[in-house]
Each structure stands twice: as structure tokens, then as C-alpha cells.
Length: 246
Image (cartoon, rainbow, N blue to C red; front, side):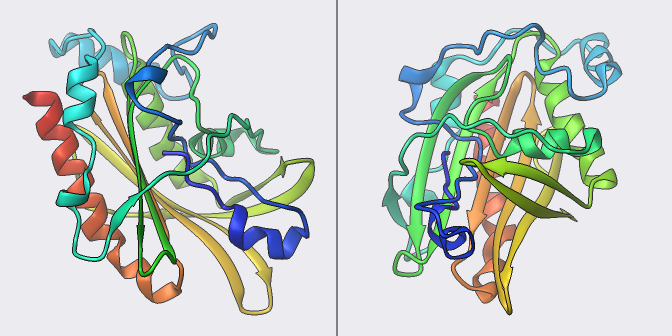
């Protein structure tokens, strides 16, 4: 999904770019290699994953075909959106508050324990708006752990400090309530004050279906265009769930 904050935040940081890689990697299935880590994204509540296993859900990771079937295409979007491609970035972010780390991880291209699948980037509003959609999969209870951790963080985290390209940054976090998708879904808005009336914001929606996770992010070019987030999140969530279920 690799959505970048480079354009707007550079104004505030006077650097070439402020990158918030909204968790979606570079190419698509060619990147489908799990990150080596000591655990399968144990940032969330393990009990959630255990309950899923008890309910008989398969712990088998999604196939590349399922992930490809679940990702958005231009034909799935409203008129005015076109295909785009954001540069790859493997930056990692560490929040200064433990309860906010799942949100910081949400900004990353790569997630520990995940196999990154299909990624698609789009531009709308004559290029002013950015939209990215990524599908990933986890072994075991990793998907449930990851998505649940986002929901928990959305309730507890209101903001955190981190470092981006060597520059300190302070981010504000707000819980969102996008349309429900899959077996569990959550939304957050991550923003940065650029001074005066200027603000840069990312609108995230994550959803889980079985061992798969959908992550969609909208970077609206204007505050008014943020109103389209719920519609776009619903389109992404519906296609993801349908693609996983076949």
C-alpha cells in the first residue's frame, strides 16, 4: 500500500519527505515472503486468536490468489480514481507510548510475521487524493492478534511521538468507525499539525477475514475529500471478504 506522507509533511519538516508508509508494500505477490520475527504479530490480545481457533477457523494463511482477488482495482472505485504507484519504503516507526505502538506499526510497509500479498495504489481528485489497499496474511492467530491490537490501540491511544527520516514528529490519533467488514474491523485517523490551519491526515481501515488482513488508507488532499473515506473503506472491505471466501 505504501502510501507516503512525503508531499505535505515536507513543508513542516523542511526535509525532502516525511514518510508514513501506510503499511502496503511495493509490488504485489512478488513480495509475498513472511517477515522473520520472533512472533506472529503478538501485539494484540492472544485470546482473540485462540477463540478464533476454537471456533474452527482455519489457521492456514491465505493463498496469493485469494489476496489478489481481495484487493481493489480501478473498476471497483468511483469515477475519477486512476491507478498509481507509490515508491517502496521499509521505514519502521517506534512510538514513545506502548499503547500506541500498534498504530505506529500500522504506518509501516512491513509487519512482523505477515506475508505481504497484493498491493494497489490509486490517485483521485486530479492527483490530490491518495488511496492504497493492501492484503496480507498471517500463520496461526497472527491476523486476529494484529487487528485486535489496532482496535485496542484506537481506544487507548490519542497521540504519540516518533522519528521519521531522523526528524522528530508528533502524531495525533483518533478512533474512526468505518463500515464493518469481515470478521473484525477498526478504523483510525492519524494526523500531524503542519502549523496554522495546515494539517496532514491519514484515514485507515483494517479488517480481518480468517487469516487475512485488509489495510486501506486514504490521504485526502483537502478536508472535504475525507468524507469519501467510509465509502472507499466499504468497497475495500467488501471486496476483501468476498475474495477470501471465494
